[in-house]
Image 1 (cartoon, helix red, strand yellow):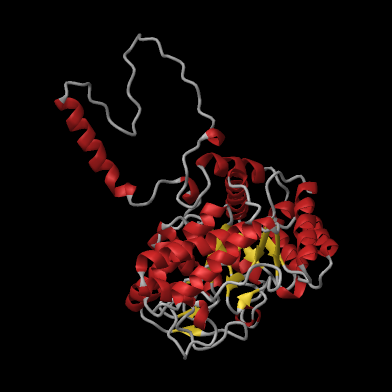
Image 2: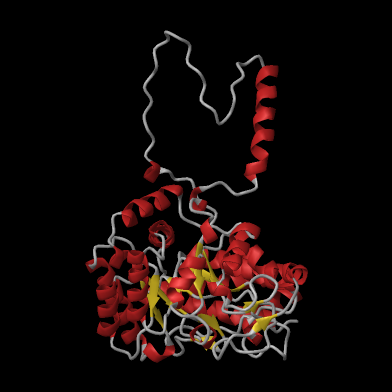
Length: 447
């Protein structure tokens, strides 16, 4: 996938099976022989006796494979997605790996941009929000634009709705406490804390779906260092990696149950950074040992919980890829794919942030080259789309790299469509969300 690796990562078995296969094969052979059965070699074709007729076998359709992948979709959904994107032209392929930003509150403007540039969808910010009716019109218009573009899967319609200070649907959706309350609740009473955290995420997901969203750019998996952390702070669940891991895992499972795509962020960790990446490139100067022992722990837990998407930060991680934003560095994506075994959608943090705009030319192309699957909120969506198309046509971007990225995004949306279809939004979703918010606040104050 990244740096020339992982081109088939989405439908491989977990990497741990690679070294186990010979041992498993040997064990099966011994058992078969002991039982008097004919021994056959696994993963190799059995020879046919000369003169014996060959029995025709039916070729299995890979798009019908219902085996679930660790990050949500089935193998069949990923195969279907690959078939779809393989037939697209450069314009459509480039659009499917971009989630655009737009200015103002006119739903028609967002829809027109998505339709014209073939975008995967949009990220809605507080700047784009007037009231509930207008939000519903926006999400419906974007959904219609994707359908009008011939795509039979949902648009990526996302929002930063973490709870606390980062809640872009303030006044429209239920107000949840900052994610730090989840950590407090788990620290006070682990069982109850996990339950209320998961329920908060589940009801948030259902409420967002009711408003027409398909993604949430949450939960935050960063382990904060406290007062010296100016950007994350109470958005982090805890200063303790294990408590943070429990909170993030519970949240991911809650979002999954609601049929909403969650985005665990900001890999490989932003909580120990003492500057703001919105303004410029900031350093994380931990050694690799400390990074693994501290910052990576909640992300590892999220992957184990079935995280569908992980957001990659713009932090300069000295121990892995010094001197450049993490989102632009292939070794960071290799860390995510190889060390954490994450095969899902790797999303960049907003490409309009200072850490990128002040350091990187053509960041959309650079991020795809490094291993990103989905480009979030470029500073100029039209310019980003144009740069990806040009890079495809010039050969700078390998088409298979972008097809792999787009296929993962499409497969993710097929998963979201399927799960949401089996989990109807209840009529009392607002009441459930308000109850869950109160329960999280109460549990978080018990510590």
